[in-house]
Length: 272
Image (cartoon, rainbow, N blue to C red; front, top):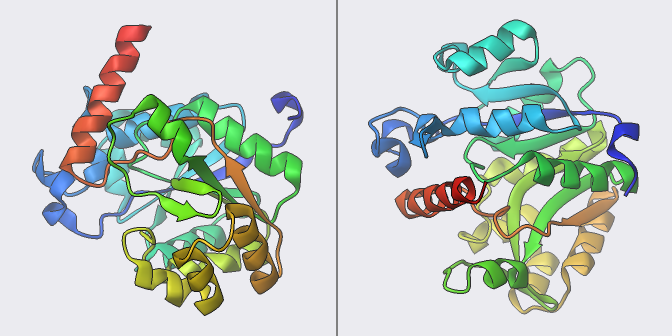
């Protein structure tokens, strides 16, 4: 990989809207409206995510897609970043796709655009820079961060995770995506169904088509072969960025994830 100092910075979009509101099981743990606003290991989760992005070498302007600016202003650290012009509010759309497209329309020069989420509490500046470095040096139109199951199970052998089982083994998504052009951004329409493809296989069929579904379901293709298929379907170059970090795919979807993530964060602190 090239020296990070020689690479351009990217725009970062953090998806932080609440689809379930106070009924979200994680938000309900602390009686809040948004799970990204819960405190985890003594720090608001969204603040933790943004702090790591600010510490990265390749993150430029950071945009948070959420329902109102007041939600960001309620966190002093985020409000200060907004006053500095480093952090920006963009209104969330009705779904993931409309939120991403709406944000891109609001950014004067949006590309390259890297999309992350407000519940990626274990993501670090190092992880982000690894992903962005691979994207920027590959000249890919679309990039997706994935971690091999073997990497995760080596660190957490007792962990129970649902992997995308393919011809070349299991894989887990890291909630990091990149688009480097308007044509590339159009592929984000797959998120009109809501994402969560591993947990809702029918969404795979609707988003990617029957051939992809069959290759996926019956493990007829490797992860790179699936990427090549999508590249032909979408007429863009697609890169799978392999993330050598066991923590990268772990986000906070439910109370069990919250407990697991907080334990990892506490362990990280004890190691310093």
